[in-house]
Image 1 (cartoon, rainbow, N blue to C red):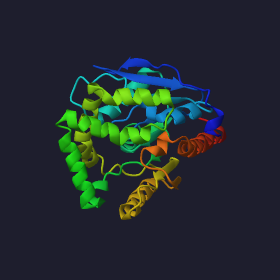
Image 2 (image 1 turned 120 degrees about the vertical axis):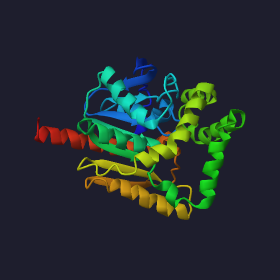
Image 3 (image 1 turned 90 degrees about the horizontal axis):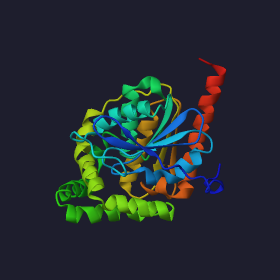
Amino acid sequence: MSLHEETQTKPGQGQMIDVGGNRLFFRSSGEGSPTVILESGLGGSTGAFVWLERAIAKFTRVCVYDRAGLGKSETASSPYSFLESVKQLQTLLEKAEVNGPYILVGHSIGGMLIREFTRRYPDEVAGLVFLDSSHPRQMEYMPPSMKRQSKILVKLLNWPWLAKPLINMMIMKDAKLVPPETAAELKAEFKSDKHFKATRAEYRDFDDFMEKTRDLGSLGERPIAVLSASLPEGTFMQTWHKLQGEIAGLSPNSTHQIVKGAKHVTLVTDQSYASLIVAEIEKMVEQLRAAKTEHPA
């Protein structure tokens, strides 16, 4: 299915759902099973998934949400952690009456979150799609220059007046590929103090979360699709694609596609690259529906 064929399909307004101490923004579009759940990257919000959300809604139900403090969601009542976010997602889906099993789609750190969700709630997950996903050992393989840049960015987070425009610039240059109204919404979110503080909390929890989720083990025989960015070019990308291949190796029923020309963010915000992701998700949906028909519960 081409994304250009469904540009008139727009998701609804969404709702706020209490997950215990704070409310998260949630939106459901389309109909059908299995339901696709989209999990954003670090500091991301639902707007980045607009092309995916619109297209997936044409053939099955798709849900998006903002983690605590990000986008339209309220700030968490307790200190932020990614592990707590996984619990909040399960509570959110339960309260929204979205029944599994799901296809979980995770971009960047979202890939680690959907792995942890699957470990905790294995019966609720039918398949997984990893979009240039984080890897728990990626920092071990990064060249010294990239490690220094990462440490500098974390330190800069202590000075919002300096860090906020830098993060906005880093993200918005690739996020502006979404529709104009969505780009404007993302820009406003990234400028807000609430969103910045949540992004800072996620950056600060990143290393600890990686350490705690290093050994999640096999994902069984669930179908897995891994799509990786090809840019920026450099020797580290060879290592990065090897790590992406390790993620694909978590199941014997997997595919790994390197998307030529895509960068980490544009993989989801560029309409042409998003169409490749949608095609993989649709194939997985059809595969799972066929399996259910052949082996009904």
